[in-house]
Structure formats: structure tokens, C-alpha cells
Amino acid sequence: MLNIQTFDARAGGNVIYKALAHPLAAEAIARLHARLHAPVAIYDPDGLAEALLAMYPTPIEALYVHDTAQVGQTRAGMVTRKLTELPDSGARTVLIATFDAARVVDRIRHMLPPSATVLTLDDIRLPAGMLTTPGRYLDKLNFATNFAFFRDTEALSTRIVSANYWANYGATQVRLWLRLFDGDGTVLATWEQTLPSGPGGYSIDSRVIRQRFGLGPFTGQLFIHAIGSAGHDVVKYALDTYAHGDGASLSCTHDANAWPSDRFAGLPAPRDDEDVVLWLQNSHAVPIPAGAVALDRMGAGQPVSYSQALGPFATVALNVRDCLPGLRWPAQIEVRAGRHVVRPRYEITRADRVRIAHVNVERDNLKPDPGIPTMPADLGRGYLLPFPILPRARFRSIVQPTPMSTVQANLPIRMDVFDREGRKVHERFLGRLPRAHDLALDFDDIDVEAGHAELVYDFRDGGEADGWLHALFRYEDRTSGHAAESSFGAHVFNTAMTWKDEPQSYSGPPPGLSTRLFLKLGDATRNSFAVLIYPASAPWHARSATQLQLHSATGHLIAEARLSIACSGSAMVWPHRVFGPDRLRQAGAEGYVLVRDPGCRLFGYHGLMDERGGFSLDHMFGF
Image 1 (spheres, one colour):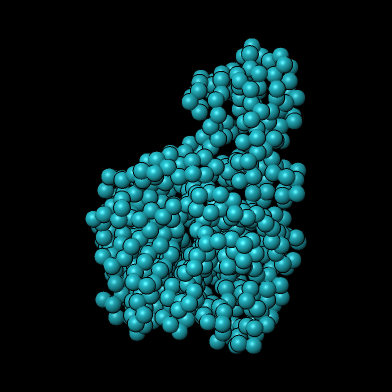
Image 2 (cartoon, rainbow, N blue to C red; image 1 turned 45 degrees about the vertical axis):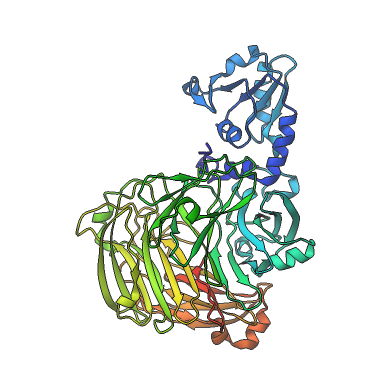
């Protein structure tokens, strides 16, 4: 496992990791390494050396610390020494592992070995023009970054869609610094894209990029760095994958999450008529060693390693059948990624149709919470995981609970089913599911035409819970055979009282009782849609006061419509029906709908649908 810490409360989230992992930082560190003359000593005032050496290995003679409690610890394979021993170390190079290092250098200048060259992490800083907050390098807004799976072949293309939501927090000039890597990790192109000055929409289309830079077919990843942002340090987007010609393939996936994880879960095993490919994408400039990534049937504890090394920023298609040849749906697969990758995509091929979706971070820092089974009555049903039931006449809907924490030995859950008007029409106790369960519940067995369902904890047979309840939702068109799937986790919804950090808010502290969801628009051949769900852990407003705000590509508000959703109900929204074709043309291809509600927290799923039976679906994002 790559020995890096992706979260650090002292520095604000995972900003230190992101500062070291940036592709330009990787290039600067290569230049820094060329200036190191042995013997090399590192002074580690902020505890960064371990991550630095894990991501960028180089020979080091000794590592020094000033905290007496840390002396004698093993860090990066070395026993830490006292800073007071540095003057007699004989080091020719002293690397001070900190940013904004001028004061630190001044404080220890008298302790440096004679004639030693002093280097600091300021030597790997991004150019000043790429910093949102120049006065503090490790400000989280300086590293509003993310990756995207990005591909353009003769059969399939990709398109990133989002909005300049930073403008809502006061940002005035936001631009994206973009770098495209091919499958070998080679840089294909680097460019910038200026976003609208207001909260307008934008897109990045692989076909446009391929033509602009004269590229051949590629499958790789796109690194995105937002400069000039405000309020949010996360780059959020929807990623469409679409086919050329007959349009047989269409998918939508959520943003990649910006941090690597040791494990991911929610990868389905293939059916007999399917191939499942995990797109393994190295997120760092250090190679992934052979055997460092493995697949395992969830709960089996018998991981099978991928035998090939993977170069810096490279991409490879890992076919599940090659690692786990006998495994079939509804078995689930755990990805042991060793913190080398951010949330990967997987791709399922069946007949002539391809669909792509994402796995989720499997937490390794949780433990069962004994308070969840006895949550206060004000929190009602507590954690809810809502998901749509698409119209039964056309679609088959399937749900599969997915363990998403290393400590989840069992999942004690129930399913509550609601029609569109919020009436509870069915309840089913799913049991105390073992970690290695193979339950996939088909809604053809339940008499409901359309609406939504919610997974909730149910401890009638005992069991444990940690609040990190997840599931995979699969939908199949009964005529075309096209399918789409999404996965997400539970939250406490729409209660005035709070439980730890729930209900979560889009901005500010909990409780999160308002809504800001992004809904993209369609194009000439595909209409966009959303399923908006009003989940309520306890009784809340009888109906929502939802606003559908149509924005142009420049952020201009073109039109607004009202929508009333029953508590515990849902609604299917089609922008072309709500606003009409003329207003959608005015909004343009990069326009969007902002779903707002000041009094309740809605949850939603969005996608595209065409007349040939193609459709996409994934959970919406908010800002």
C-alpha cells in the first residue's frame, strides 16, 4: 500500500496530498531530485516526509525532527533523529520538507552542516499564476483538483458537463488548467479553459479536444485544476459516455472523488452474457508495482493480484474474468487499490451495448456505532438510502446492498417502498445480510408501478451499523436491453435535530435542509431527465416548495418553474417538457437547470434518454 495520508485536519482536508500529487509538482520534484547530492538529510517539521518519499522515492541518509516525542520513531523506513544532531550529520544537502519555508530556514540556519545546500518544498510550488490564494500555499482552494476518465475512440466518446458553481461563492474569474494523459501515461495535451464569469454551464468534449490537438484515438485520464475558485475545493462534474453512429451505448457517471483509497467496493461480477472491465488508472507519478492491486470477492478474503506494473498516470483495462474467472452476478467484488488510484470506473459490455459506472470508497476508518440502533425518536427512521423505481412498464429495477466499510461484517436492513405521492406501499425486511451476501432484489417481485424505495437499518435480528450504508441500483430497458446503474450511500434526511454531521448541508453546518442540485440539459437526439426524491427520516413539510431554474451557458436565469413533491414522494422531471424547446434552445447546449428548495433536502438521479432505448442514470451532485 502506498504510505500516504489523504486527509489531514491540520492543513484542511487532503490538501497536502493534493499539493504533492499534482502533475506539475511531480515534474518539479524530478528536477529537485536532480539537485540532491549525497549524503542527503531531511528535516521534517510538519510530518510530510513519509508521504513525500512514498510518492517520490529517493535515497536519504537520515531524517530529523524537532518534537522530542517523535524522536526514535520509524518514518519512511528510517529511525528519526534529533534536530540538534543535524549540524554534525555531514550532509551535503538538507531538504526541509515544508512549504512557505522561509521562517523555518531562518530558525535553523545556524544548525546547518558547513557548506550544505538547503532545499525546501517551495522548490516544487506551482507557478504563482496557478494559485487561488497566493499568500498561503497549502490553502485548500489552491488545489481544487480532480481526475476524469476520458476517452475518444472510433466507437465511443466522453463529455464532461458542469457549471461554474464557484461564482455563487464570490469567484469572479475561474479557469481550468487541464492535462490529458493517454493509456501509457504520456501527456497528450495541456491547455486552459476559461469558465463563464457568472454561474454558467460548461463542457469538455473529447471529440472537440481530439480535433483541436490533432490526436488519434485515446483512452486515459484528464486532470482538472480549477484556479480562482471560492467556497468549494472539489471539482464536481457529470461524465457522459456516448456511442457514435447508432447510439447503442450511453452512460453517465459522477465525479471521481479527489482522493485515493486503499479499497473500493460496489463492483459487480459479470453475468454469463457480460464482460466487466475495471479501468485501473494510476493517479500518481510513481509506478504501481506488480501485485499491488488485487480483486477479491466481497467477504472472501482471498484477493487475486494483478500481475502487471502500471506506469505513472497510466490506464489499463482489467477484465474481471481474468482475475476471478468463476465469479458471476450477483456476487460483488472488492478492489484493493493500495491508495494508488482515485475512484475507478468500470465498464460492462453486453451484446452491442456498453455502460460505464463507478465504484465507491470503502472506508477503513470506521467502527460500529452503538448509538445507531437507539437513535433518538426525533430522528425517526434515521439513515435512509433513497433510490428511484423507474416506470415498470418499460424498466426493470434492481437493488443490491453493498458493504462499503472494512468493518461491516453484517448489514441489518429493511426496504420501505413509496409511490410518487409519498404513500408507503410496501415494506420488506431484507435480513441481517452477511458481508459475502449475494442478494439482488428485483422489483418485478413487488407490485409498484413507479416511485422510489429507501433502505433503512432494521435491528430486529440484531446486527451492527456505522452509518455508511450503500447499495448498487441497476435499471434495464425491457425492449432495447440497455442498462444503467448507480450507487450511493445513506444519510439522515430532513430532521431539525442533528446526529453528528447529519443531515448534511450543501454549505455551512448541519442540519442540511435545503437543496441545490445540478441537472444538465440534453441535445438534439437525447432528452435529459431527473428523478427527484423527497426522503424524510421523520415527518417534515407535507410538500416541497421546489424551484426549477433554467440557466443559460453564461449563468443567466431564463425561466423558473415550481414543483411540489409530497414528503416521502418523488417526481420525474423532463426539462424539455417543463420549459419547452424554445427556452431550451435559448439556454444552449451548456445551459442547465438548478434544482432549488429552501425548506427541504431533496435527493436526485439524472441522466439522458433517447428514442432508441438508450438511457443513462447516476446520482446528481449539488453545490
